[in-house]
Length: 429
Ligand code: SDX
Image 1: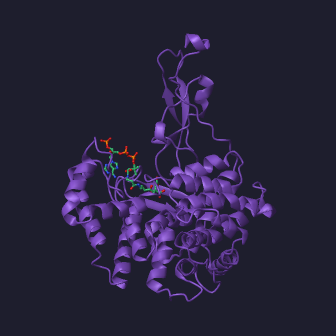
Image 2: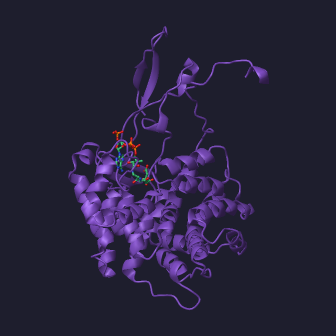
Image 3: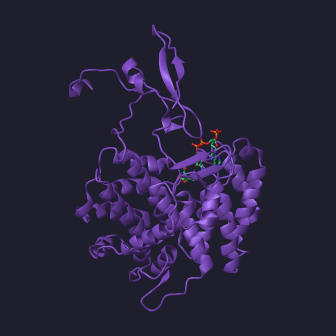
């Protein structure tokens, strides 16, 4: 923290208001405005574009430079040298695991991958064509009804076993959503498979036989989880923190995060990218869509482009792009027509003045959808995969908040409705 101050002078106020300016390890300083209420005035910041909602040690983003650090480690280095589970350990505990800790953590997660059989009855209540994200919202929220042995959120042991259960069970639940969607039997997790191999096994295996998962595809799946693991105070993580600030149980907080992630401006963008590429259909139509994206009167936006924080390349998109090339080469799909449209679209957008001037670069969702499509995952499951990878970030932030002094989140407003008035009788209305 610093002894820097901001002095706020307001017309009509007799005295200026001194506000502390706080500095973190990296990034922008913040003005602590918490004392403004005592001066009977609020800040106003719809969309929180200029608001730091909390202090955190988990993830740092420099949007101008396209930097993403998890506990200080750059995302591209983690993608190259760590697995998703090592990254989970890092996000939860603050350090990467040593060999013993890594093996123990993998065993713990493996031992929690099964879900209670009654979850199958829960899923059978959904229509066959229910969107998997609708099912995930319901099922994850319902998980709070199973774990009465660890509901004391003030107990660090309870918080950690809840984190382990969520990380371990999300792939199982995600695969069950898919199986429900395609009308196939559920596949049980197999303890001799890695986290990503297990997910692909539960997704694409059947009791009649399970295709051998190639190391390249398993690596790509692990990378998809890793690149989605956490991203500071994005909309869904902020939702988890706000839900958690009331003392709600962690499963319902994660269900709230899943709901927030579903929107096409957030985690739903990966599905929207594929739908957009399919709608473009051919490279010759790209110019028309780019024109629409620039038209103020047209609500169409280039899905997978732009970001609230990154005004440079999303570092995750760079890693995702390489993984995309590797997967498509492995599968002999490097001439995939959608990939060709995506690469042409990216080139145009990076040269077009509209996108350059507004610093609209490809984000994490731009290439992830193409990889998932190549892996045989239907578009309706894309955001479920995002939610599965992001669960560790959500629960790490929830745990960071609950393990430090916190208050219930309760923003105020600028009221522009009617002044107080009396109720007229019916015939006077
Ligand atoms: C994720 O926050 C996170 O960290 C999220 C995330 C994570 O890991 O949690 O990174 C994951 O959500 C990535 C973003 C996925 N969403 C999309 O790809 C959807 C398309 N992108 C846009 O909807 C938009 O860019 C947002 C929502 C991502 C960001 O919007 P902002 O920051 O609120 O910016 P804005 O809407 O104010 O746009 C600024 C300008 C506007 O033009 P002007 O009003 O200034 O003239 O840029 C334009 C917008 O019209 N613009 C776009 C555009 N994105 C912004 N124009 C065309 N196509 C786009 N994609």
